[in-house]
Length: 448
Ligand code: NDP
Image (cartoon, rainbow, N blue to C red; front, top):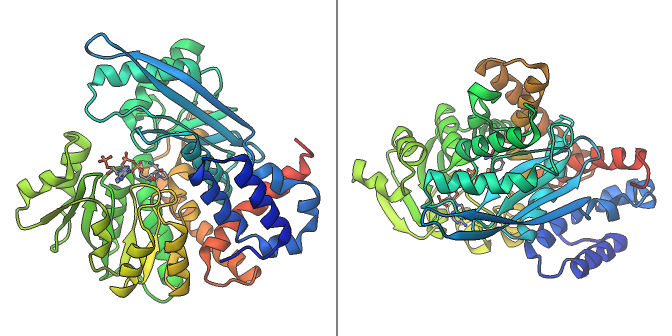
């Protein structure tokens, strides 16, 4: 898809010039702007109010030093980030990524996407994202704790339950959130819902752990049903073996599909009998081991080094749940050749622009990340509500609300795609539906 509108083309050129050296951020902005042609034509008032110029610029971005002492008594220094992208519809909200690849471009792309995703959830949450180039792999619990405490010592000045509410992401799970929450409470002397993804004994929500993966499958099932099919009897390829991948595999299996792959950054396993999820959970959630070790329990499965090959495995449905740009044009073409009918994104921006082009050209059902993986942040929103009310809902209550939200997200994407003349293009539908609510709020609040 190319941008037709001259104003949008010029805006993108300005974004490219102003954000040089930030390819992921430019990619995310391009993907949104290329679907807004019909919006700009229908709503010149939003252009007049400068909404688009403002929406592509973060409200605030914070970068800071994170010094900590390793187990050998040596000082280590990482870089911390928090990008507070947009607060038009609620407090900034978005996860914290701990991974050596983290840089400003990655955090900005994630914060930008988060703005539209949070809008789609129907809950009052603005967009933000944070992280650090710290690598949790191979670190002791003590090292993780000292890093998290140092990170939060600075971050605590900038966040708050009504201002900015971070959560987990790659490398940040319950352990890290616990250490960060403890440090925030100690510094600010207040017990509030300042982070989500907390442990159950101190304000966490039931079903938050499962929410992104389950939500991905609820969205995907809606998309499949709207097109006359379902998960039942389908073969599914999943990448990643972290939080999102594990619970996507669980729900897809419950819906009657067979999941045949999972991966980590070293390689992937293929089990033609269907992945033994209890085994993966034990390896990944309890023992923090590599996916390769699956073969110690299932010698009949196959392990292949490297991640890209996972997309060569024949499947009906692909659920990328690892990281950005993990499906390129070449992999997308192989998926199509192998008869894949749907790609639905658990990870953020896992498909390159070339891959998306191939999905659209070949009429694959394409569930874009900002809609398909919004279940995680939606349930974080539910955790915030429970914290404010000082109540805890049951697993079933939270799961039922999550299902309702994912259905309404699909409906919003579907309707927007039809209203704006691109029926079946759920990427355009998600971008437009997410954009409209934020844009109306920004216009109403004046030039801020
Ligand atoms: P985890 O850290 O729990 O798991 C990440 C998985 O992806 C691991 O298997 C990891 O392997 C693999 N991975 C990470 N980076 C790479 C890489 N560069 N190349 C290949 N594989 C990689 O993270 P989550 O499951 O929480 O997040 C996965 C994706 O889902 C991310 O894009 C995240 O932004 C997105 N997401 C997460 C949400 C959540 O609620 N957790 C909500 C919405 C989106 P290894 O262990 O070897 O690093």
